[in-house]
Image (cartoon, rainbow, N blue to C red; front, side):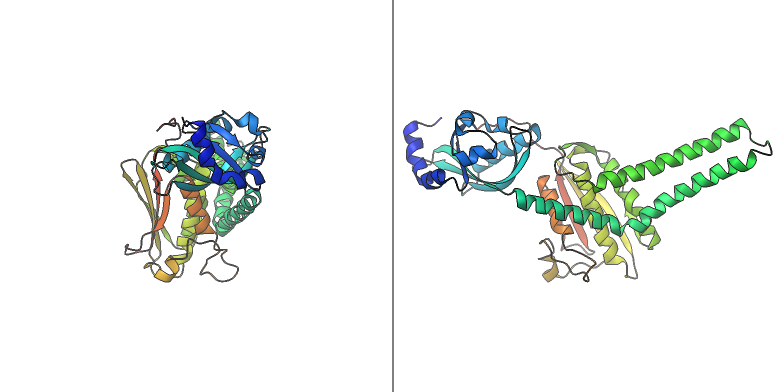
Length: 371
């Protein structure tokens, strides 16, 4: 805990922005409790400065976000400049959500002893909504690329159902239907409709906005099964070998739909890259090292030029023809993986083109704050 005198002296430098209410400013003690804030900051939560005083940062966040707040405070203690910038959801008292940009600073006394944290907050709701719109556009573009294969995946089981129904209908007049035959054919129809249901459910899940999904345990094999169901037929129809090496049977904290979206985007890119090559293959490999998972997406291309590789993760950068790519895919995918506390990178040392997704197998979102 810090003394009132230290607080007043050290907070003088923030007084001008504190009183102007142009941005939200709050002071948080080393126990993670608010000690003071201006009207602007309190308005983001639809509260008053008086009602926020004494509350913990975790009281103002949902369970899935509390770890982000606490991790941010703890990280400040180890950073050289003791400053940190991040985007964070603000849960308002009426249940609505506001996206804000937080600038965190750890304030120390002249002897280097930590005193408290300063939070400067800005509303970025409009820009975040724009980001969501472009993300959804990129997701629908990814589905559009696989539309032919998906249509084939649905048409095949439809043809099977139609054929089985026609056989049953044909045999009714001649009395050749046995109970065993009927049961066998109906079982095939039920199995086929279940296959179609999985495809439709996968499309519905993939195309929705998963930004607000909680981080929960998802099985890697199920994630890969959902992705392959949407793209396998497209690869096969275009003569591209898609080889998935043994998938580990493990579960980890993630937003499953978002991870599927990233994987499908990378597979779309690999498909387009090798489509016109004499040797056409894409391979997915998995590695686990300690508490980290690596997913490697390789293709038969011979790498990416350095001048392209250095820019390809930036928004709107694309090498594709006009109308064939927005340049949003990789930058959005990178952002999603970073939200998972992971990394998306291009392996320039690999013989063939290779992108690597690295993810933690456990998120320490339940640890309590302490120094």
